[in-house]
Amino acid sequence: MSLNKVILIGNVGKDPAIHYFDKNNSKAEFPLATSESGYKLANGTEVPERTEWHSIVTWRERAQFVEKYVRKGSLLYVEGKIRSRNYDDKEGVKHYLTEIYADRVEFYSLGSGTRKGVDNETDATTSTHTASVSSSDIPAPTEKAGDLPF
Image (tube, rainbow, N blue to C red; front, side):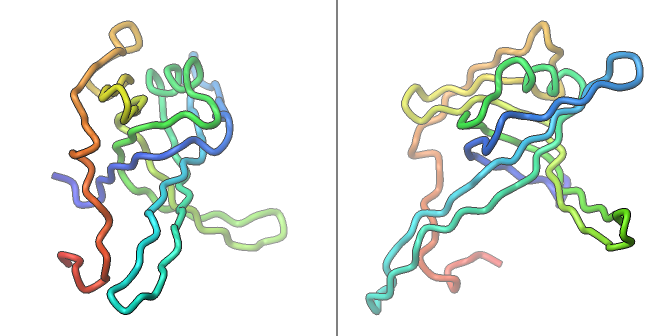
Protein backbone atom coordinates (compact mmCIF):
# COMPACT_ATOMS: atom_id res chain seq x y z
CA MET A 1 0.00 0.00 0.00
CA SER A 2 1.21 3.46 -0.88
CA LEU A 3 1.81 5.73 2.10
CA ASN A 4 0.73 8.85 0.23
CA LYS A 5 -2.71 7.49 -0.78
CA VAL A 6 -5.69 9.60 0.28
CA ILE A 7 -9.45 9.17 0.28
CA LEU A 8 -11.58 12.30 0.19
CA ILE A 9 -15.32 12.88 0.23
CA GLY A 10 -16.34 16.42 -0.59
CA ASN A 11 -18.04 18.91 -2.87
CA VAL A 12 -16.66 20.28 -6.12
CA GLY A 13 -15.95 24.02 -5.77
CA LYS A 14 -16.25 25.00 -9.45
CA ASP A 15 -16.81 23.34 -12.81
CA PRO A 16 -13.75 21.30 -13.85
CA ALA A 17 -11.19 22.74 -16.27
CA ILE A 18 -10.49 20.29 -19.11
CA HIS A 19 -7.30 20.30 -21.22
CA TYR A 20 -6.70 18.19 -24.37
CA PHE A 21 -3.25 17.38 -25.73
CA ASP A 22 -1.24 14.64 -27.51
CA LYS A 23 -3.55 12.40 -29.55
CA ASN A 24 -6.77 13.12 -27.61
CA ASN A 25 -5.29 12.64 -24.13
CA SER A 26 -7.09 14.75 -21.57
CA LYS A 27 -6.58 16.22 -18.12
CA ALA A 28 -9.26 17.54 -15.77
CA GLU A 29 -8.61 19.77 -12.77
CA PHE A 30 -11.05 20.95 -10.11
CA PRO A 31 -11.13 22.07 -6.47
CA LEU A 32 -12.74 19.78 -3.88
CA ALA A 33 -13.87 21.02 -0.45
CA THR A 34 -13.84 18.66 2.52
CA SER A 35 -15.25 19.70 5.87
CA GLU A 36 -14.82 18.56 9.44
CA SER A 37 -17.87 19.20 11.59
CA GLY A 38 -17.60 21.61 14.47
CA TYR A 39 -17.81 20.25 18.01
CA LYS A 40 -17.68 21.21 21.66
CA LEU A 41 -14.80 20.22 23.97
CA ALA A 42 -15.44 18.86 27.46
CA ASN A 43 -14.55 22.29 28.90
CA GLY A 44 -17.29 23.93 26.78
CA THR A 45 -15.00 25.43 24.12
CA GLU A 46 -16.68 25.50 20.72
CA VAL A 47 -14.49 24.33 17.83
CA PRO A 48 -15.96 25.64 14.53
CA GLU A 49 -16.43 23.65 11.34
CA ARG A 50 -13.24 23.56 9.26
CA THR A 51 -13.14 23.34 5.46
CA GLU A 52 -10.04 22.32 3.49
CA TRP A 53 -9.66 22.84 -0.26
CA HIS A 54 -7.87 20.22 -2.37
CA SER A 55 -6.70 20.48 -6.00
CA ILE A 56 -7.81 17.32 -7.83
CA VAL A 57 -6.18 16.23 -11.11
CA THR A 58 -7.49 13.39 -13.31
CA TRP A 59 -6.23 11.97 -16.60
CA ARG A 60 -7.58 10.08 -19.61
CA GLU A 61 -10.81 8.09 -18.93
CA ARG A 62 -11.31 9.69 -15.53
CA ALA A 63 -10.88 13.15 -17.08
CA GLN A 64 -13.49 12.28 -19.73
CA PHE A 65 -15.88 11.08 -16.99
CA VAL A 66 -15.28 14.32 -15.04
CA GLU A 67 -15.82 16.45 -18.15
CA LYS A 68 -19.10 14.70 -18.96
CA TYR A 69 -20.69 14.42 -15.51
CA VAL A 70 -18.99 16.46 -12.76
CA ARG A 71 -20.19 20.00 -12.03
CA LYS A 72 -19.81 22.60 -9.29
CA GLY A 73 -21.51 21.26 -6.15
CA SER A 74 -21.20 17.55 -7.06
CA LEU A 75 -20.57 15.35 -4.02
CA LEU A 76 -17.62 13.08 -4.88
CA TYR A 77 -15.60 10.21 -3.45
CA VAL A 78 -11.96 10.57 -4.62
CA GLU A 79 -9.04 8.17 -4.12
CA GLY A 80 -5.59 9.24 -5.20
CA LYS A 81 -2.00 10.07 -4.46
CA ILE A 82 -0.56 13.28 -3.05
CA ARG A 83 1.80 15.02 -5.44
CA SER A 84 3.77 18.19 -4.70
CA ARG A 85 5.49 20.39 -7.25
CA ASN A 86 6.79 23.90 -7.63
CA TYR A 87 7.37 26.39 -10.40
CA ASP A 88 8.68 29.91 -10.95
CA ASP A 89 6.26 32.46 -12.39
CA LYS A 90 7.15 35.17 -14.94
CA GLU A 91 8.43 37.45 -12.16
CA GLY A 92 10.68 34.70 -10.78
CA VAL A 93 8.50 34.02 -7.70
CA LYS A 94 8.51 30.37 -6.68
CA HIS A 95 5.07 28.77 -6.16
CA TYR A 96 4.43 25.46 -4.38
CA LEU A 97 1.46 23.24 -5.20
CA THR A 98 0.08 20.12 -3.58
CA GLU A 99 -2.38 18.17 -5.73
CA ILE A 100 -4.30 14.92 -5.50
CA TYR A 101 -3.77 12.79 -8.61
CA ALA A 102 -7.04 10.83 -8.63
CA ASP A 103 -6.99 7.10 -9.34
CA ARG A 104 -10.72 6.85 -8.66
CA VAL A 105 -13.56 9.38 -8.93
CA GLU A 106 -17.12 8.46 -8.00
CA PHE A 107 -20.34 10.26 -7.23
CA TYR A 108 -21.18 9.86 -3.57
CA SER A 109 -24.57 9.97 -1.94
CA LEU A 110 -25.33 9.38 1.72
CA GLY A 111 -29.06 9.25 1.00
CA SER A 112 -29.01 6.49 -1.63
CA GLY A 113 -25.93 4.66 -0.31
CA THR A 114 -24.32 4.40 -3.76
CA ARG A 115 -21.18 5.57 -5.51
CA LYS A 116 -20.78 5.72 -9.29
CA GLY A 117 -17.66 6.64 -11.23
CA VAL A 118 -14.43 5.69 -12.97
CA ASP A 119 -11.37 4.03 -11.45
CA ASN A 120 -8.12 2.54 -12.75
CA GLU A 121 -9.63 -0.87 -13.46
CA THR A 122 -12.22 0.41 -15.92
CA ASP A 123 -12.45 2.40 -19.08
CA ALA A 124 -15.02 5.00 -20.09
CA THR A 125 -17.33 2.39 -21.67
CA THR A 126 -17.68 0.47 -18.40
CA SER A 127 -17.55 3.35 -15.99
CA THR A 128 -20.54 2.74 -13.72
CA HIS A 129 -19.96 1.01 -10.40
CA THR A 130 -22.25 0.65 -7.43
CA ALA A 131 -20.99 -0.05 -3.94
CA SER A 132 -22.99 -0.12 -0.76
CA VAL A 133 -22.00 2.73 1.53
CA SER A 134 -24.00 3.94 4.50
CA SER A 135 -23.52 6.95 6.74
CA SER A 136 -22.42 4.59 9.52
CA ASP A 137 -19.37 3.67 7.37
CA ILE A 138 -18.02 7.20 7.71
CA PRO A 139 -16.02 7.72 10.92
CA ALA A 140 -17.09 10.56 13.20
CA PRO A 141 -14.53 13.32 13.70
CA THR A 142 -12.34 12.99 16.75
CA GLU A 143 -13.16 15.43 19.54
CA LYS A 144 -9.61 16.02 20.79
CA ALA A 145 -6.26 16.06 19.07
CA GLY A 146 -5.05 13.62 21.78
CA ASP A 147 -7.43 11.00 20.40
CA LEU A 148 -5.54 10.79 17.10
CA PRO A 149 -3.91 7.39 16.45
CA PHE A 150 -0.58 8.94 15.37
